[in-house]
Length: 294
Image 1: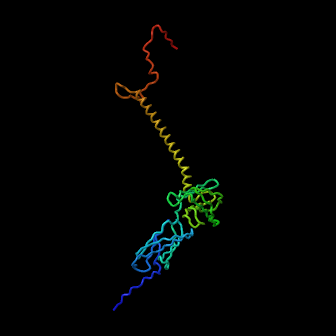
Image 2: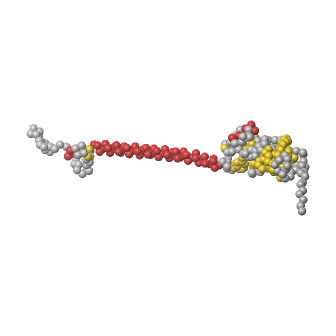
Image 3: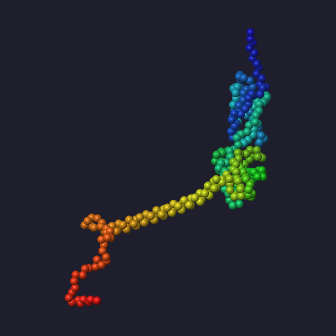
């Protein structure tokens, strides 16, 4: 024998298994289950979102008959903190949770340029990749001195660079740049951090490779250029000498060319006589010329 028992739904029970499915910069997807299985009618839920930073409240209504409910909370702020409460519309027992949205990402390409008595921090505009960031919000810069174990707030700027002075020789510094914090430092962007080693040379360790490679390039490039110029001049000189020798030989060969034989005739020098051989031969004497004998 058996008996079928149908339980009376208790609308005073809270929603079950409330949790966050996905959280972005400006939205959050939450999910929960109905207070009891297989509701036979539409159920009205009240979703209250309390902004823990701004101290404001918003209430959304969700009406559904599904046992599992998924809802997206929109128009949130990056880096915000929220308290979410879900309950039936009749103000039954509630289920709650806390969520934090994803903060703005860190600025890209943070670099250090070393000057004589100061350094300059440079970075790319965050608005290039963050549609929710306005340049008027600006950036804030922090510095950590590892030797003194002190973190200092250097200031904020709406530009994409910042000047830092009065650095001490022999100290190592870490600089961080992030979207400026709002509401007493409770809503900040992710920081971009760069290490600067001040070892008495005024060089940046994180940018030292770049700086040193630039210095090496500044030396190597002119040397290579001079070598190339020297080699070019040498080739030109050799070419000119070769041309001069070739022209001299051509002129010499042309001067000894015999059109009758069709070739050039060169003498070895052995068959050449004395200079007297070239003088005309004396064949005789005239009768009217006196001969003087010493």
